[in-house]
Length: 240
Ligand code: FPP
Image 1 (spheres, rainbow, N blue to C red):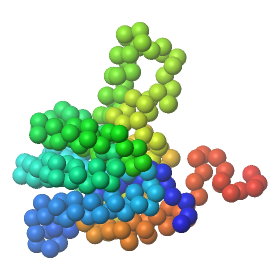
Image 2: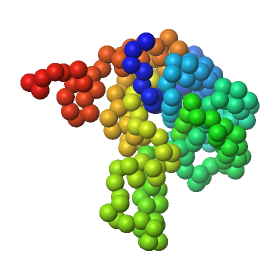
Image 3: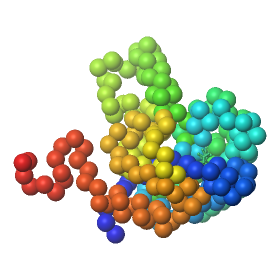
């Protein structure tokens, strides 16, 4: 099957365009995106990929119309509550990379309940970035580490890359492969620290249409890439 990435991250873009192209409300696009994510999630974990991160809602998405923000928040509560049984059945541990500031109480409650109910699973880790911004995550991590130093619990000399990773919202391995659907070629404040050495892929397909076959095509692209991590090709025998 080729080289399978350990950690895949998806920026699920194009839900709104998918709907407007069909004369539908943007919210229908988000619902289609959510249905697609459910199938994709199963497929990705069945392929043996251990970590899947998705960008569900950015800190900047609060700038959208109240109607759209409310629709998305209701969709999250619905998904987290109604699909809990499925996550448990499939032994998927759900974690959230999130700032809890500005989130509704019922959204926070459904997030906490889902992560609590799935916390003992180990084989598949589903990281949902919700009210997430990578820069804010780095600011929050810096405050945590600074507080530990101020409290005398940490020496300045102990701060290294590993410690920073451990103090982000979730302590996850580096992202290997970032996919952003819909043809947009931007990172939009998504997992900047974790994706430093990732491969990037920008298919034209809008997220509701980015189905299992599209994911398999993406995987083939990943498998053809040569990852160097700043060194030489993994398979090169000579440095020339
Ligand atoms: C970006 O597309 C998409 C979002 C802001 C929402 C993503 C949410 C889902 C797919 C819902 C399911 C998620 C979970 C975790 C239950 P866009 O609306 O910006 O699309 P556009 O660029 O075409 O307007």
